[in-house]
Each structure stands twice: as structure tokens, then as C-alpha cells.
Length: 376
Image 1: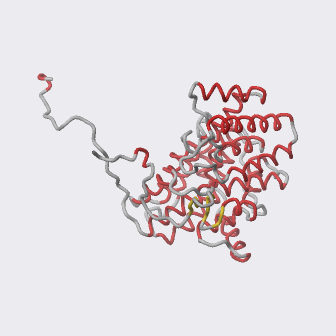
Image 2 (image 1 turned 135 degrees about the vertical axis):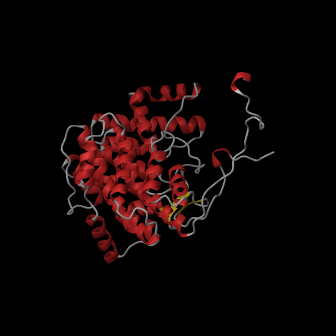
Image 3 (image 1 turned 90 degrees about the horizontal axis):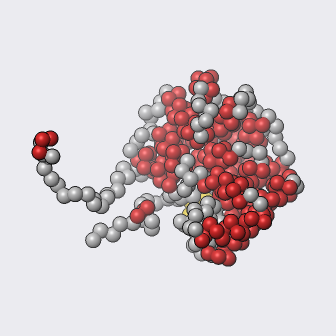
């Protein structure tokens, strides 16, 4: 009997040097560095450099990298015109997927799959995707797009392009931390999708477009949006425990808990939870305190009842909401971060490429003859 690993659970398909969850410490690491240490001590630009180049940058390397990123900012008039025609009711992940595909159309050397071109294309996507997300947000709300400001760093510039202003440094730091925590996670569904597409030599834009499609699903990247919808459904802290107990009793899908990789808690959660709490303290509003208390009670109830811990999406969703971002923007923001990991894996795949083509276990009927239509 064929031993089938449904969902590829437990199947090792390739080597990677980009990231790993270290079992002895239960820590997610990027190129050997614990992600919680990177989030607390480095800006996201430093982490992006690390993921692509294998080592953290020195001051000169970081300055050069930031100049490269800023030089790639800006969308063409053609893309902006296309985005203005997007249906306002379309999900931002759908508009982002289409806009990234359009970037591929504008690349005159799109059929050049040489790995030495991947780095510059990766930086270009890294620079342009935040503007796509911000522009889409403003257009769907009847506002004019705001051009990037090259005097601002990556995270500051995103707030500027969304809202026309940069919030307090503490808020920017919280956002920057989330970017680091979401940047990479080994062979997750969207990364594996990107590697499969890249393995056919379809090109980086095809691979990233496919990865965006995979991330859009609520069982993957869309979970951070689902967490916020769940909190809004719960409504109040007083209702939180009863809601969780009822959801468990009725086997309702509860978003933001559990993980296919971690068994004793997601190592990214404490850092993001601390950032979420800082957002609550900075705002110091009744709404912010309400969401924090709801989150705390839901977490405690799930752990005490089932021993299942929250994943990164659980604190990230409400943190983004308190930063002022609309719920449908949460997963596109995830893309702004994960583009680093995706493109690192695409490069790694192509450096020693083998077409990814698994087998399947056929369960249909045995071979049979086709009968004439009047004999069926």
C-alpha cells in the first residue's frame, strides 16, 4: 500500500540555507540568527539584506542597500492607470497579485532567467510592493495616491504613502518588528508554491504572483485578517471566555492558534505580543484596551482547555488594526515582508534547479473502453 503524506506533512523535499526552526530552542532562525533577536536589534532593511546575502550588513553595506531600494521606488504611469480601473470591491490581495503580474509585463528582459538578475529584481519588488499596497488602499477609499518619499526609511515610507504622515517612532518600530517576524518561514505553502513555479523556469514574476495567490487563503496568510474578524465577532472581553468555550464545544474553526511546525508555541509570538501591547499603551484608548483584554482571555482559555498556543497571526492582526490599517490590508502587508523570503528561495531553487514534479496515488476507475454515444 502506498504511504501517502497528505498535505506533504513530514516530507523533506529539498535543502535550504535560508531559515530553520531550531528544535533545541524552538526558535525560528534566519541564516542562523534567532528571529526574536533580529526583531529587537535590527531594522527590517538589515533583515532583508541578511535573508538575501547570508550575513548582516555593516554600515556601508546597509547604506548602499537602502539607496538601491530607494532607487527602485515608484510605479509607472501605466500601472497607476491600470490600478485606477481595478474594481473597488476586489480584495487587496487580488489587486496586488494583478499589479505584480503587470510589473512582469513591464520588464523588458522577463525571459532572462539568469540568477544574477534575481537580486536586482528582488529589490525592485521589495521597493514597489509597498507602494502598490498603499496606492490600492487610497484608491479604494477615493483618495489620490501619495508618491514615495526617499527621505524616509522603508516602514516610515509605507505609513507616509498610506496616510500622508508618519506616526510616532514607537508605532513605526512595532510595524518594523512585524515585518521582520513575517519575512521568512522555510517551505510554507506560498514559498513552496513559488519554488514549484520557479522550478519550471517560468520566471520570478510568475513565481511571486503564484506565491501571492497561495498566501491569500485564510488557512495561510489570510489568517491575520480572520483573527481580527474573530475578535470583532467576540465583541467584548466579558464575552471572550464563553465564546471560546462554545467555539471549542461546537468544533468551530478558530483562527490564530496552532501551527504545523511549532509544538510548544510559535517563537515569534512573544515578540509580536509585546509590540501589540506597546500599541495598546501608546493609543491608551478604550477600544485598544478592549481588544487587548479579549486577546488575553481567548489565549488563556485556548491554552488551558486544549494546550494549543497562538501563532504569529493572533497578535499581528489586532496590532495592524490599531495602527490604522483596514483589515483587508493585513495580508498584503504580509506580502511586503515575505517578498524577501520568497525571492531568497526562488534564487536558491534556481541555483541548483530540478523541476518539482511529485507523484500521486490514483484512486479512480480502472482503464475502460469508450462506448459509442448510442450505447451509453
